[in-house]
Amino acid sequence: QQQVKQSPQSLIVQKGGISIINCAYENTAFDYFPWYQQFPGKGPALLIAIRPDVSEKKEGRFTISFNKSAKQFSLHIMDSQPGDSATYFCAASTQGGSEKLVFGKGTKLTVNP
Amino acid sequence: DADVTQTPRNRITKTGKRIMLECSQTKGHDRMYWYRQDPGLGLRLIYYSFDVKDINKGEISDGYSVSRQAQAKFSLSLESAIPNQTALYFCATSDRTNPLQETQYFGPGTRLLVL
Image 1 (cartoon, rainbow over the protein chains, first blue to last red):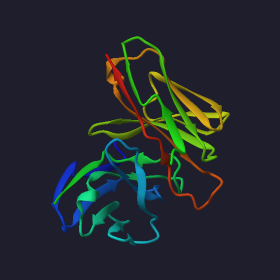
Image 2: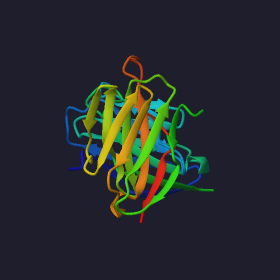
Image 3: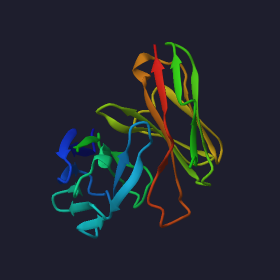
């Protein structure tokens, strides 16, 4: 069964626009929610992460919004740039950290110049 | 930097062959993981190891085996490769001893084609 559902599968945004990727989960024991960014030919790398004690975390142009009651979290990329074009994975863990992550299926983001 | 290395980077093999993918890390991390990535399916955990004497099955371990030869080395074997094991394989590490550690570090991946 898919524990973390990610949408959309692909996303095309114009330069300067806002990119939004959504994830939903069912397991209320999840207590750590990272987002990974993967460029072609590379392994995924941590972008930003949030714990359920806060509703939002911002790092530069990247923001995670977290809705515990709805069991949803999303990644917002403000002022999207062509260099942001990559595949993004949401993930979740019950271990409070990086052990045993469960990943979403990924979103391929294309930012057109 | 190449803290997590995978060999080979690309491999073509035939159905029924036994192959081994190797992962080495210089990060000093105790935890290591093997994932498989398929288009549209994301990253799925094959096996993980929290120390040299600890091996655990992940979501999709059938058809695979692993060996943790040392803290720094974790190998994935396909005992008898089949075409649907064609995929991109990633090794990753994480650090239990650092409570502030919040990430798994991924290698560059091995692209495997089974004919």
